Amino acid sequence: MGNISRQFRSEMKLLPFMLGKLLGGIMAVIGFTAAILIVNWKVGHSLGDVLPSALSGVLGIIIFVLSSRLMTRRLSERQADTVNSDDRKRMSMLSWAILLLLGVLLLLFTYLITR
Image (cartoon, rainbow, N blue to C red; front, side, top):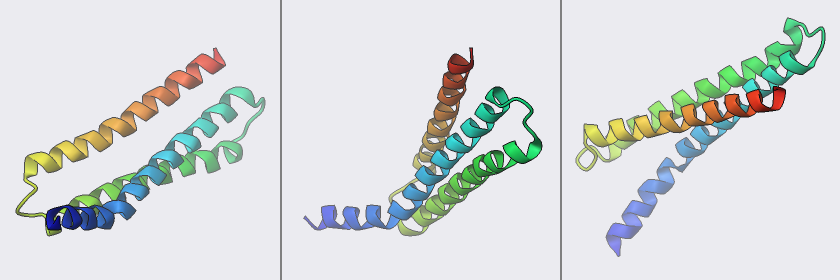
């Protein structure tokens, strides 16, 4: 029982970083989607119309990367003896794969809608 509660507490300490990664991914998807929609659907758009959405997307990517690095650092501090470098690489690759998959799905969705 002690192992389960210890694991639960360590997961709860990582929750803010996971939520930060989720927030960053959602911001990136919504920001870049809005920028693409403005460029494709609005006639006579200017840089001022697209810039806030694009900056939101870039800020989302920055939040995602920072949360990922902070989570990796927290994992290395707390679980240095239980998490080896291969596991950390796999966790990082999984996060990036999910972000890239969401980006590809966004581009596919945008392509199909604007077609």
